[in-house]
Length: 199
Image (tube, rainbow, N blue to C red; front, side, top):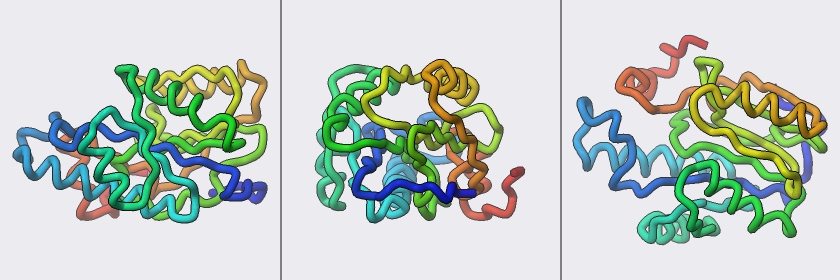
């Protein structure tokens, strides 16, 4: 599961990109109303931040509401100006590059997240895919590299190719509690009962 060559937590920044809670998870609108979607988004985000305990946690956002919430739960805030996840993470990586040797980027919609320990490895890109084996739920990589982010459909394969093109070691980690994300109404069924996972 986790590599035995884990880095010291003090050298690692955890980046958690979070959208405005009021506009989160619109694809769940046929199952949850706006207030329920906002509550779910906040609950999952808090779960992810708790899983990152011991690391230097940075919430990446362009929402003042999210920034206030992040500070209230003890996280640092990186306010980004570029639209889109790839641009936002690129901007955030630049912000932390001179303070940390490694970053772990983790989505905020992982309701079963327990720990990020042991994921980061020296000179390596580590990826925890989604349970469908196509997306990138967690991505760990050295800072200060020209790594290009490819979040979107099939991001797992694009990030694998990018790691190889950068000459970095590549590790794909199967960690079930980090592989269940919530994007569609069907995903909600596994929030209350993780044993329904098809991993």
